Image 1 (tube, rainbow, N blue to C red):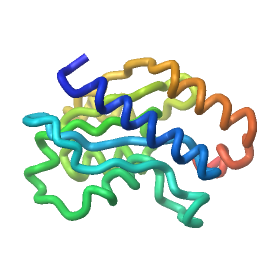
Image 2 (cartoon, rainbow, N blue to C red; image 1 turned 45 degrees about the horizontal axis):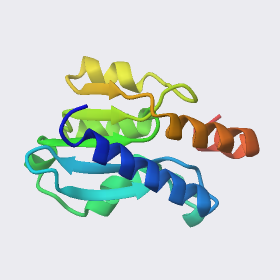
Image 3 (tube, rainbow, N blue to C red; image 1 turned 90 degrees about the vertical axis):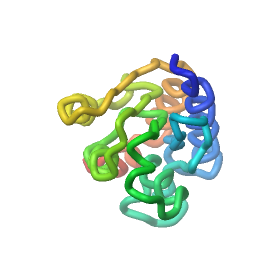
Image 4 (cartoon, rainbow, N blue to C red; image 1 turned 60 degrees about the horizontal axis):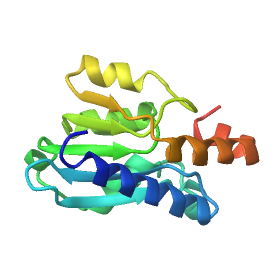
Length: 152
């Protein structure tokens, strides 16, 4: 793992667990500055908690970073507990985030990972068992809520 990858994945999982304990979808993330390891923001899926159509884990993470200069994102890694959907992939590309570390892509893998790579973003899947387990538990317990979250 790169220098900050363990920290980033630990935070992403902590946020996913927090979301699950709040009755939401267990997807979490954080944005870390590659230069100094500073955590610029962290968040988790808040669709159910806030009645939101768009607050996926990655979007919540970026929202919690507040306004940043565009140049800041270019030197960051986005950590996410689950492979990003199309919407979250678009946000990663919009801000020019050059690296995305994914906790797992067994329970969900859209086309985002490949598209990010085609657009010059490094994607690293770490197959974190904690992330796999909590997501599978949620899908087994609440399949209709999961399908709603991914737009099916």
